[in-house]
Image (cartoon, rainbow, N blue to C red; front, side):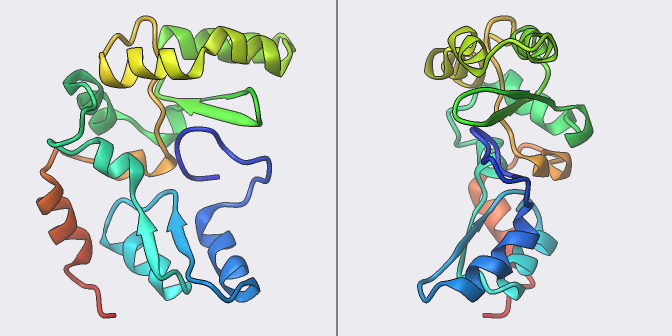
Length: 168
């Protein structure tokens, strides 16, 4: 539930669900959602994950194709300000944009998931928002860890930072 993009139907956060999955399967588990600093990186491994996926964190990196103005919005974003709305298959979130705010209003007005999905046009409007930086017509999909992104850094700087305390 903490990751960006299309969210699951079950409202269980990363640090609650990882140990449940680790205890239920006999294959390596990768944790995703809210992993944006060395504390959350180490916590994922302490809970039994054998790998991590840091999507929002690396979308803010200098190497990412994410538009520069969107990276700057990510640095300023706070998870408590994120727009959240229903769609197909379940839920979605975005840094506030005119489109995401329209979708939130449609959700409040009890429009169907299909109506929201048809308005949202996931692939097109993700491209407009995330890659093209057209925040007036697109949306910006991020995970809840966005609050912990305080600067635009290289991937090397990110990796060096989050792994500096790691003890396998």
